[in-house]
Length: 287
Length: 287
Image 1 (tube, one colour):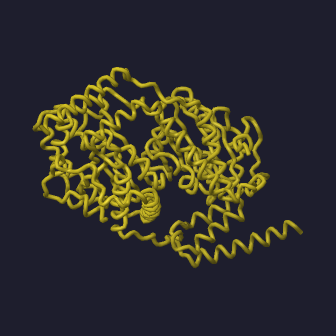
Image 2 (cartoon, helix red, strand yellow; image 1 turned 90 degrees about the vertical axis):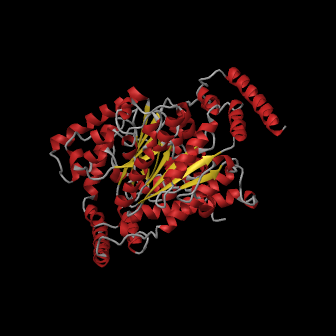
Image 3 (tube, chains in turn green, purple; image 1 turned 45 degrees about the vertical axis):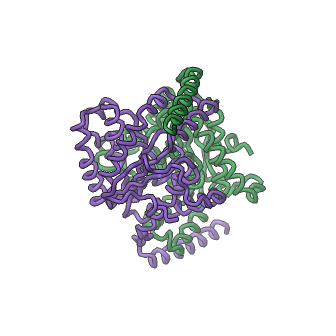
């Protein structure tokens, strides 16, 4: 399956997450080989990312958003974990601090944009400011309405000025599967602490979130910074889809190992001279 | 082997890296099983680190220093790569910027100290300010001389105030093996770009670096923030040693999954009520 083509939100297209199938998994044939396929995709990811780090010309920003329990954390562990931690940073964004709230909404985000050669993964992001901010009326409509354009312009800045590729993943889980996952946590002593009152309270707003996502995806899926809707009822499919889309984007960068900055021939001569001297020195000592 | 006991620089002890064997690998029996042992150690690391992230009471700072080509980058990829990128950040420190140089030497370092629940890995660190700064006389002796105490006091702050465990690794490679690794890079098109003039120039100062490390380790290996000298001529041993020492430190934290912040019984009732309502709602729709 070409995950990129299959799951991209084509710029300008309508989005209706209500009609999206979160249980989609292609023909499902991949499930039996999912572990091996994921291991292969992670190895490819790691190799490409290390090449990007060496190349030092491009950077990659991965935005993870989605419905609660769809698997943002799971993607970090199972997919992003394939990258070299040197050159790859995961940044979570929680409720803004007082200092952050006293700035424009992109201020705290901008400082975590990836440098050349680096990957930045946002676990939640500036999109919270048109999602939770809209659903819970944290700011008036006229404020969140204008943010779509501000986001597009800011993402364009990263792309134009610093060669940043931006991939945005909207992780979609069905309401039933979400409830099943909450229930799983209830019975798992290792995960009970993850349960918050908010989980259940937010379920009342499930439908409002779908509306908010629809508009966010429609208005901010651009050729340079596309959204992908990822069906997440099957974790194995979710992981495979994200891993392959990221790997395809890295491959499209046409990465090159940089040219040496030194005169290799001269270094070779120096090297052989050093070997000679050290051998001579070593012999002298032994004499 | 108990790597921690074997490789720790006991606080107050003398350090003579000249007499240290960088090719040490215990009985070497582990070499045949090194890949499997490392895979097991990484899995253990990942599990413990994720527990620490949940526990949210401790934090871990890993300092990587060492001689050029000993393998700081290799440790990041082969060992730290076993951790969940969410909650683990690798920070490199290069030549200070003008703004950084206009502050005290710990200013730029402090902002990367790990938050509760997090792991921070420093690839090079504040120790450069008593290593390269001393070897290349970037500051007068009286300036670097007083830094050992300043470092100990700052590390104590992290430990006392934020529950940070600090593990410092000095990666030691022999001068011969270093030269062999430089030569390898010369012939590997994927790694030629990593060669800099500095590599060879720094070799002239190999002995000065050993002196600088000796004093740094002697004066800053404390019970709370010990140094470990890691023999690095064998990469498999280096990786196993670091992975096991970190895992042992995490185990010593006596990590607990935190208690749920919600009333689980109440959540269970709400859950069952939600299931009931949604089922009823679903039926109604179908009617």
